[in-house]
Amino acid sequence: MTQKNGLILWLCVSLFYTGCSSNSSEVKVALNQNDTDIITVHDFTTLEPLLYTDSEKPQIVNFWAMWCAPCVKELPIIEAYAKKNPNADVLLVSLDFQKDIETKLKPFLKDKNISSKVILLDDPDSNSWIDKIDPNWSGAIPFTIIFNNKNRSFHERAFESLEDLENEIQKLIK
Image (cartoon, rainbow, N blue to C red; front, side, top):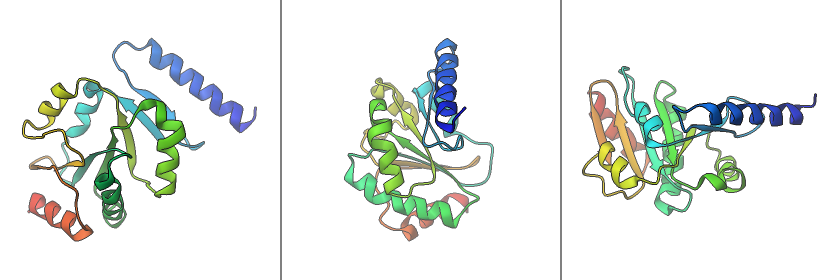
């Protein structure tokens, strides 16, 4: 079996099992032929547990989209932080369209050298889940949550520099 046929079989089996599961709306899409590079598609129910931790290490969850210029400008800053601080967990939550994963999102991530974990949030009830994340969030992006098991901060703005992001994280862990 060729590597391409193996990937196609893996996708078919994954979609079959995902379709049979009534408890989750996750859909896994391979970013490339390496199974560790996967974009999962979530609704808010499957995303929400990722917004909490029992760990003391910094967690960064950034809501963004390819069509958002401040988001795109901020991504290299978050990526630089992740590379400089491998102990931190970084999750990039794309708000782009699921139909664009293959044709737009994957090429974008490759072009921008994004290696942090990326998931896609596909939940049309944004009025409900935005308030559950932070009642003060207007829904504008970029929006970043910085947290650990003791503290949490919300940032409805783009970080201007690596130092800007590091300063906010230092406030959290002190």
